[in-house]
Length: 155
Length: 155
DNA sequence: TATTGTTATACTCTATAACTATA
DNA sequence: TATAGTTATAGAGTATAACAATA
Image (cartoon, rainbow over the protein chains, first blue to last red):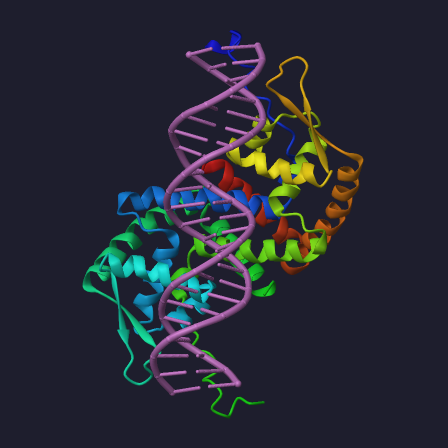
C-alpha cells in the first residue's frame, strides 16, 4: 500500500541470469535453504547438522573410533574433537578407551543420546517430507539419485 | 598389492545408510565436490566462488552498489567489504563514489576484471560440462530445475 | 616408523551491533 | 530518522602442522 509513496523503489532486483543458469549456484542456494529448514524443525534442542550426522552414524556404528567417523563423514580428524566434545559434554555419547589398542576411543551413544536422536529423526522426517511435498515424490527421488550420482562420479 | 599383508584392514566403511537416504546429506556432499571441481578448473588464478559470483553479477549490473549486491547474492552487507576489498586490491573492479548520493559506491569491473572473468567463465563452462556429462543432458536440466524449485519454494 | 587423538594456528564464513557520513 | 559503507567482535567451519601416547 505504501508502494506509491517514496519509501524505496521496491528493490533493484539485479540481473542474476548467468549464475542462475549454473548448477553450482543452484546447489549452494538450495543447500542453505534446506539447512535453514532443518534448523527450523530441530528447534531449540539445538544440535548442528554436523552433530546430528555424528549421532546418526554412531547409532548405526556403535564403537566406531574418531578417525573412522571423520573419514566416513568427510571431515578432518582434528574437527572431530570439538564435535565429540560438545556431544559428550551434553551427555549424548561417551568415549570408551579401547583395551585392545589404547590409542582408540570407541564412541557409543548414551541412553539420552539415543532418546534425543530418535526425536531429532522424527523432526528430520517432517523436513524431508516438506521437500518431497514441494518436489513431488518422483522428482524428489530423481533429485536424490542425481545428487548421489554426482557425488560418486566426482570423487 | 599389499592387501593381504597386515597393513590395515582396508577401511572399516561405516554404515551410512540413514544419512544417504536424505536429500540434506546428499546435497551437502554434492556441493562440496562441485565446489572442489570449480576450484580445480579455476586453478592458480585463485578466485573464490564467492568472488567469482561478485564478478559475474557486477559484469551484468555495472554500477550496482554494495548493498544491492549483498542482497542479490544473499550475503550480509558487512561481508561485502572484505570481498570487494580483495577484488579491488587485485585491480579487478573499482568503487566509484556516487555524485548523486555520496553514501553510495558504484562498483564497476576494470578491463582487467572483464578479462579475468571471461577466462574464468570459460573454465567454469568446462566444469559445468563435466556435470552434464556425468548426469546426461536431460537429467542435468531436471536437477537444475529441481534445485531451483526447492530454492523458490523454501524461501 | 606409523597411527589415534589432540593441540595450536590461521583463514574463511556467518551473524550482530554499532559507528560515520550522508540523506 | 533512515540508509550505505564500514569496523569490530564472536562463533562455526576448514585446513595444516605438530605433538604425546601407543602400536
